[in-house]
Length: 158
Ligand code: 4NP
Image 1 (tube, protein in one colour):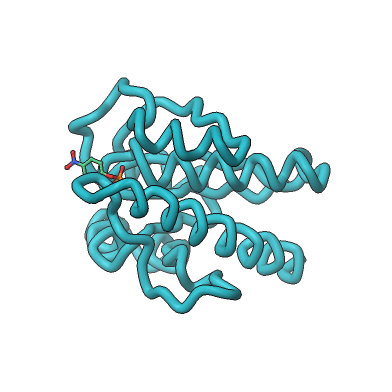
Image 2 (cartoon, rainbow, N blue to C red):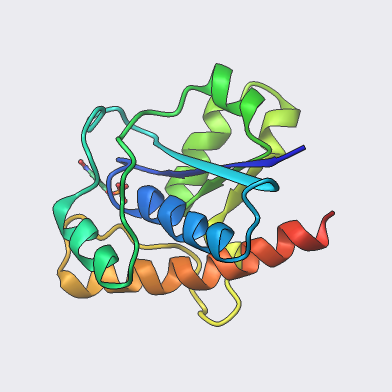
């Protein structure tokens, strides 16, 4: 059975679509298409139907990541059933996901992206939306590191 992973941030236009694209690039590079599948969603539906933030797209494409996903809000009744891991980007995402969880089984699926970091010592992937260009680069640095750790976590868990 394919491992199903959902990346979650606040708006689903910066951090989580980037996490999805980085993870898909790694899955592609390692030929793991039959093992792992990922998607992303936001806590809020404010940007529903929109592509990823243009600034995030520009920074991502420079590293070869094409952000193709369209923003959508988390749907607890569908997403907690469909996904094996629901991975938030910061502590507020985690608190919001905990309150959307319907039961203990849902709660056990919730993880924080920075728990998979191997090189960086961050406890959240900071929201880049209102900050400068360096915030978008930091998001990508952290996501690349965490996606490597996450892949190892999944492959060790087999
Ligand atoms: P994201 O960034 O959670 O990484 O997608 C944000 C995008 C939009 C907003 C906040 C954060 N917003 O308030 O609209």
